[in-house]
Amino acid sequence: MFIFLLTSEALIRKAVTTVGMVNYLVFLIFILISCCTVGFFIIMFLSNRKNRVSNAPPPKKVLFSYFIISIGDTVSFIMIILSAAYITASTSTILMQAVIPVTMVLSYLFLKRRYHLVHYVSAFILLAAILADVIKDTSDSDHDAYDFTWMMVGLLSAIPASIASVFKEITMVT
Image (cartoon, rainbow, N blue to C red; front, side):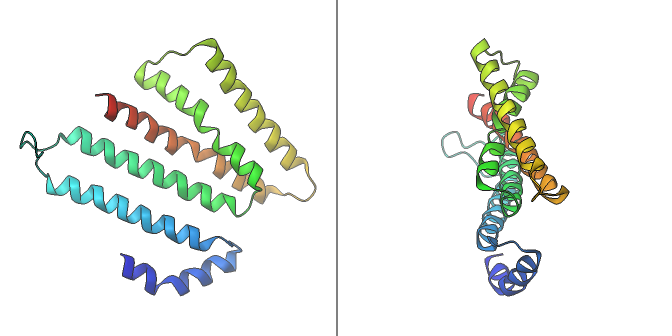
């Protein structure tokens, strides 16, 4: 996989810079890490390695959870990197904070986790800040629907990251 990425770097650079993406090296690094991470968990899942302590194979549930964790984090990182080329750094930073309320909702739904009032107020403040930033950026005359689309991509990156966070909690606690 690494040799493939090295040999096709010139083609990818041409394709990515044609679109106007200036951070293609970071994008390539995340693609490489993503392929290695997913490949590692596929190999681990298929090889069914035995546990050194108990000499028993790891449960399929744990391997599946690790696979979902790696896919969720990878997809989230790629979505953030792609959207970061078209939105401002401050907007990208505030959009990444959407993972907190989304994780709270998913934890409530799947783990039956309950939160205190201060947690709900904090999540509401985050959502209000995200909404205010999106409204401010879309009301500028310099921005168009294309920028709004990339803002939504950055915002939606919170969903796979939150799914990975919930699976991390499930895997680490059980």
